[in-house]
Each structure stands twice: as structure tokens, then as C-alpha cells.
Length: 426
Image (cartoon, rainbow, N blue to C red; front, top):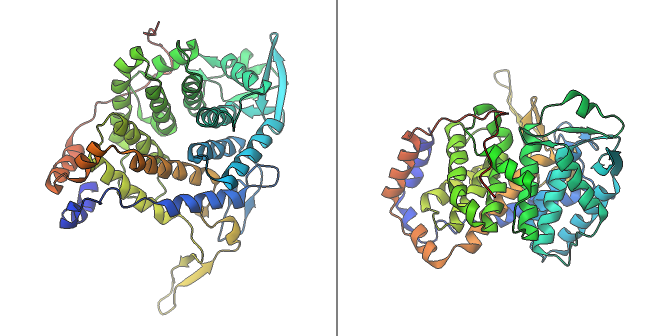
């Protein structure tokens, strides 16, 4: 189906234009997404979590982990030249550092991000990922000089397990996690892996922390279907940051690990146009193609596939004046068009249909924004020799590549939650 959808476009002789790949930049989509997050941010630095634009229902509080993910996407976006974006980031840092709870376990002083006595480890992971990434890019603007930082790192280390990953919940008043031996959670484990990857990139550690070694070995496995959607986009971004570290031992095996994850995911999920919001898929693919660009292995076909999907994903961004169409159920009656009830909270965001309703949860826009920013980074950093390679491929070769991608049978993979392989790094 993917091949048939693209064929009329690919067969178009205009594909020979030299500006085909670098023309669609989606700068307006990125700008609209940032404006959406500015309008959704509350005075205390948090975000309005969800809004149903055609029903008028708004969820003001809840899901700190998705707010932390929004913060991470803004950290990826920030390039040091947008005062309003920096102000939004500073307010978010203030909110997260204020809403922390300190507690003690076995003589260790630990800390969680929470509006009560219980919180998600994923919230800590994504907040730290964004904070460390900002410090990596702009160390003087975003110093990591609060004691919270090390307490967060200690907390994640304390609740992680080398056989599976990290627990999802932490309760500061009870020690039931230790008593029950609660299983690790797929999302949080992948997000912790991302945090450790950015930590090592930021501080240029010569030797890897044992926890990072454990995650590298943990994800160097065969993958199974159930774990792919929750892990893919986070692990792929973690791999990209590990690649930037340029560790000689890791560089020998990292390409194989990256391709294993990508081929496993492509078996079940493609960048095929769908009648649904594929934001996290696009985020993962764009991270993979960003790695391929750095390796000078990015092909015209890959960039065309990514650009085509982002053009499709753009249809899910809510623009001013957008209305919901309600088809007439009786013959002779006209369709109705329902306007948004509070455009201020919806415009610029990406919608998805959840439980039959049009939702604008902040995480939908978060994943989309990161995907578009990765795409822009690729376009801005294509080397001249790579530009020539990418832009002058014959469209017939592109057709052959797409057909081969469709016909090849990716290696079947599955991932177990135990039986960790021997760690190969010293």
C-alpha cells in the first residue's frame, strides 16, 4: 500500500529537481507548535494537559510525565536565539524544581518530581534529559548547579534493576517497591536510557557508568512486538546521543544495534500515510535518519520518505478557523461544521482521535515538534557532497529502493525482560 500511494508522486518527472529534498522545511509547523505550547503554559510553568477543541472540555492538571516530555521537546528545539522560548523553558525548570519531594531510603537522600507523595520515574528521566541537553548546548545559560540534579540521578539509580530496567512508580511514604519487587516499566526504562546517554554526552565521561552499560546490554537483544511502540522513539534517540559520544568500543557495535531496532520496528510500523496521528513514529524515524546523515549514509529515498510523512502529519495540526465536519445522517440534510469552542487552547497543536473525541494532549504536539526539529537539523547540516548524492538520484532508483524495502523480510526479533547478556564494555 505504501508503494502504491507514493508511486504517482515518485513517477512525476519533477522529482529530478535539485531542490526536491531541501524545499519542504516546515518552519511554520515548528513555529505554530511553539506558539501552542506558549499558550498552553500556565503562570506557574506547567502546561494545560489536554483540551477537546470541539467539546470544550479542558484538563488543567495531571500527567507530569507528559509535561516533562514537553519540556524535553523544547530543549531539543531551543537553539539559543529565541527569548520567548527561553522564558518558557526557564519557567518550566522553575516549576519542576519547585514540585519536588525529598525522602530517604537506606541512608540515601533521594528526590522525586511529584504533586503529592508519589511520582513517575519517567518524569524525572525526561526532565533530566531536557535539562542536561540544554546544559550540553548552552552551559552558561542552563547551569546544572542545584543539589536536585544529583539526587535525581541517585534516585533513578536506586530504583533501576540490571535485569529489566527501572520501576515506574516511587512512593515517598512507603517502601512497597522494595517489598514487592515491582517489575520495571517499558516507557520509563527507555526514558532512563535516554537520560544516561545525554548525561554521558554532556559531561564527556571517558568511562561509562555501570547503569549505562547495563542498558546498552539490555537493549542489545531481540525485540518483540509488544515492547516496540513504547520503546522505539526513546531508545533511537538514546542511540543517536551515544553515537555522538564517539566511544571507540561502542562504535564497533552501535551501528548493528541501531539497524536491529530500526528493522524490527519497520516490520510492524512504517511511515505510510495513515488516518491517525503517527507523531511518535515520526519522532523515531527522524532520529534514525539524523544518525544516517551523520554517518553519510542518508539516501534521497530516506529523506523523501520522511518528508512525505511529515507533510501528511501536518494535516493533524490545528490551524485558525478549523471546524469539525459532522456528516448528515438523513438524506436531503446538509453536513454541519462545528467551530472550536476555545481556539486559544487548540491552535498550533496536533490532534488525535482518542475515545471518539478530538484531543490535543500536549504529548501529541511534543512528539511532532521533535520530529520536525530533527528534520530541520538534517536539512541544515547536509554536507555538500551529501547534498549532491541526495538530490541527484534518479527517481527510478528511488522506486527500486522503495520496492525493496517493501519486499524484504526484516529479521524477526523479540525482547525478554530477564537474562541479561554479559556486558561487553570494560
